[in-house]
Structures are given as structure tokens and as C-alpha cells.
Amino acid sequence: MVKNIFLLGSTGSIGDSTLKILKKNKKKFNIKLLSTNQNVEKIFNQAIEFDVKRVVIFNKQKYLKYYQRFKKKRIKVFFNIKDALRNKKRKVFLTINAISGIDGLEPTLDVIKFSNNIAIANKESIICGWKFIKKELTKNKTDFIPLDSEHFSIWSLLRNENFKNIKKIYLTASGGPFLNKKLNEIKNIKSKYALRHPNWKMGKKISIDSATMMNKIFEIIEAVNIFNLNINKFEILIHPKSYIHAIVHFKSGLIKLLAHDTTMEIPIANALYKNQFNYLFEQTNFKFELLNGENFIKPNKNNFPLLNILNYKFNKTYFEIILVSLNDELVKKYLENKISYISIHNIMLILLKKPYFKKYYKSSPSNINDIKIMVEKTKKFLNEYLTKNAKNIKRI
Image (cartoon, rainbow, N blue to C red; front, side, top):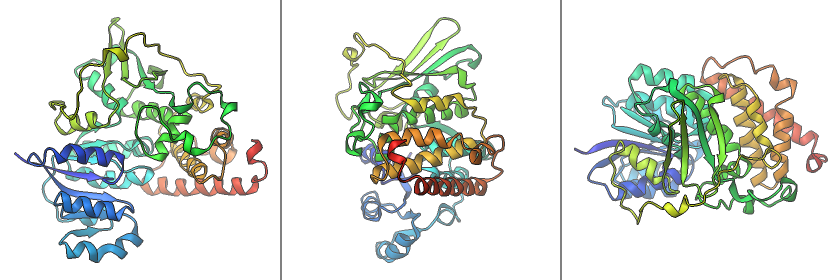
């Protein structure tokens, strides 16, 4: 039986990995919807190749400019998920949400009711809007699958386990391209070097987050939300070979770990096939040599000062939205060569202590519009701060 799926964020790296799998399994899956923000050329070619008749382009200018091009190929193009699925009556088997950034939250909420299963690789949605996602999942009886390699690994390890027996869960980090560098040695390093992840091929934003270790902070917040566990249950370990993705230590003394090659195709394929997938894309024998003599390392906060953020309380308040928004904007400025590498760390830690933000740390958004307003407030405050302190930024 052919299974219908939606793929949101099809033009990014997760989208590429998903389509690589689906290309070899066209008889088993039928893509009913693709989406992008602005990579129109790529999504146009994807729609033609996979015979997709519905496409969403979230960028309004691009949507208006290229609408007719899709129409000539009898492809319906929409500006948002609601319009694209307005007359949809039956749920699809699976939606994969690979949209990056906080912009992925609203499409997530809109698509849940049309999906039997939803696999989410969007950190920001889970961090900033999990209570809204959880509500929609419960309301529509939609099963959730975490798609980040670490969370997919934890999710797999905890199946049929009693959560009360968990002693500690370890999320592994590669350490990024600057693992053996002191922060002072790389304070002004160019972004092209920060983008050179040693093991994974990823987008620019997440590559910088890996270098600063912000991605692990986000992953812990995600894990707290997804598995409904106290943050004290989680710890970060640096594992430079990136072969083991999660370790669960039980009170019984048993320790379970999950390892797989450094490719997102494995968690994606297993989400598509509900862990019944025969991964035969390349030679994938057990790489025991990657475990021989492996030393796990506790991260040094002097080299990764953003890890101090884990001392804050995470209670699904505006704090998480402010954190995500500040990081998005700081990484963007760094990639545009407007701030230095060390400024990502220093400005983040300075601004989180500002009274302007701290007053929001005990209150929570009531709806998605509250989240959007806070994102804009945060970006505005940051940009005003950068303008006001432009001369001193490099010395911060």
C-alpha cells in the first residue's frame, strides 16, 4: 500500500536526505505536499521529479513572482499550509517537518490535524511552542516522532521502558571544529572555518550552533519537553567521532546506548518505516573501530561558555523564546561578518541578564501571536544594542 506524506522544508539538508530515501522508494511513498521559504528553483525541480501537485512558498514575494510558472505545470502553489490543505479530508501517513527556525512553528501547528504521524526536526518549534504542539497532538491523536539524531536515539532507547527507572541521559556532542582550541585563540575566527564541521554535513546556522555548543543547549531543552523529564536528568558528553548519539543510564545499573553512522538518513528512514527499515544505501557494517579506545569528554565551560545558560530555569516561559531569537540573530550577524565569533558568546550572556528580558522569565505566551511579538521585541532590542555599542562590540 502506497503511503502519502508531506515534506515541509524540502529544500534544506533534512529535505535533501528525505528525498534521497524516497527516490529509491517511489512505489511505497507518495509525496502530496512540499514547502520552502524561498528556494523556488529547487522546489520546482523537486515537484517535477516527484510529481507533487501542491507546493507552499512561504515567502510572499517569491510566491507572487513564480505563481504562474508552477501553474503552467499544473502544480498548485500556496502561500501557507492552511490554504494548501483547506479541502483536505483524510490524514496522510506522515509529515516530516524540516523547516528551520521559529518560522517552523505555525506550519507545524497547522499540519498536525492532517497527519497520523509527524516527525519534527525543527528545534525552535519544540523549544518555543511545545505546549501548543502537545495540545494539537493530543487533540488530533497524532503520533510524534523526534527527528534530531539525539532525540530519535533517546526515543528509541526508551521504548517500553519505565521513565521512573532513568538515572541519567547523556546527549553526545562532537565538539565541533574548535574542540581542541581555546576560545581566546579563535575569538575572531572567520565563519568559513566555523562552518567546517568534522563529521556532519549541515546547514550554516546549525553548523555555527555546533561550534558554540548552543545546539546542545537547545537539544537538552527539547529533550526536557519531549520526554517530560527534569533537566537534571540530562548531561552533555563530547564524543568526537559522533558514532554514539545517546546513552541512557538506568537505576538498575544497566546502560543502553545507540550508535549509527553520521547521516540523518538513518533516523529519517526509520521514521518513515517505523524502525523496520533495511538501510542498504551504502556499506553500513558495525564500525567497531570507532568505539575502540573511545574517550568521552566532559565539555569545558571556558571553551564553551554558552553552556552556562543551562543554569537558567526552563519552565516553558518567554525565556526560551528570547534565547532562540537572540541566538538566531547573533548567528546571522556573525555569518554576515558584522560581529566576531566571540561576540556570539559574550553578547548572548550579557543580554540574558538585562532587566528588559528578565521581567519576562516568569510569564508564558498564551498563543502563537505572543511568541511572534516576543521574537520581534527581542530582535529589535538586540539590534538597538548592537548599534548603540558598535564601537565596543569587538572588545566585549
